[in-house]
Image (cartoon, rainbow, N blue to C red; front, side, top):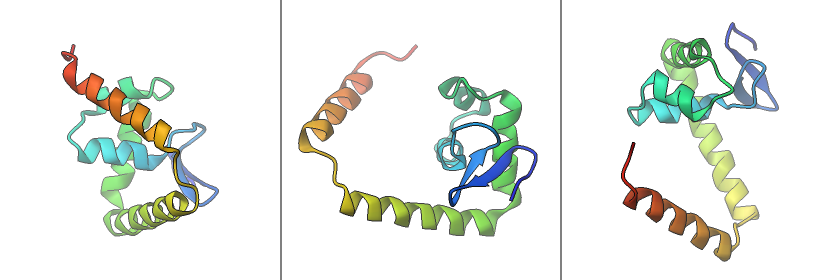
Amino acid sequence: MTVEHIEERNGGLYVKGKRVSLDSIVYAFQNGESPESIREAFPVLTLADVYGAISYYLDHPDEMKAYLERQQQRWQELQATHPMPESFLKRLEDHRKSLAASPST
């Protein structure tokens, strides 16, 4: 499957020609991020890429719901078979806390 801004690779949906998953954009959009802030978070994307991904998501609600559920299941299976080391999880949590404590710009 390929549309103007989205392509399927290895069972996942990605921004065409980029290593950014559609999931990443959709979750940011669902969390209230603007297309401009999503683009800033993924400098490899153009604003047209972001709007194209969001348009695809909005134009295919049933397919996207099923896709995101499958991706979530795949992620849970991966976590179960390849757990992250506790030291990494602690560093990640410490980093999240430091980001939350720092003033936003």
